[in-house]
Length: 142
Ligand SMILES: [Zn+2]
Image (tube, rainbow, N blue to C red; front, side):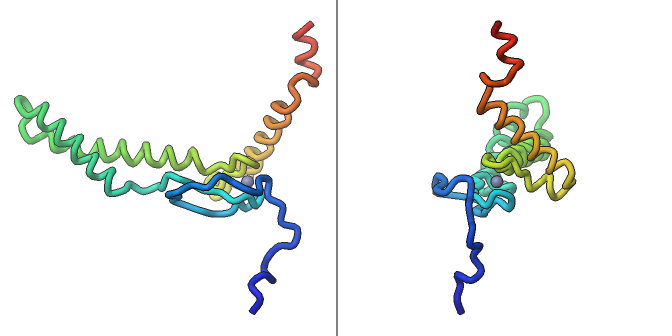
C-alpha cells in the first residue's frame, strides 16, 4: 500500500519549518492553513500540580491552625479550582493558530464566531503590514 497517496499534492503551509518543542502536550496540523502546530500546555492538571496544591493547602493549614484548626483543610477545594482555571486559561490561550487565526475551540462552539475571528485576524495582519500606506495615518502625520 502506498502511504503517500493520501497526501495533498499542493500542500502549502504558511510556515514550512516550525520551531520544535521538546515536551509538547499536543502536536497537530492547523485545519485551516495546514501549518504544523504544537501546544505545550495540556488542559488537565499534572501530578506536579497536585503536589503543588497539597503543599499550598499544607501551608494555609499551618498558618491558620491557631484560630481555625483543621478547617483550613477545606482551602484545598478553592485552590484546586484556581489551579484548574489557570490551567484551562493557559491552554485556551494557545489554541488559536498564530499563522492564520483559526481557533478550534470557537469553531466547536460557534462556526460564525470562528469565521469572524479569522477575518478579524487577517484584517489586523493587513493593517500591521502596511500602516504607513493607509490614508488615516497619512492625514494624522500631517
Ligand atoms: Zn492556521
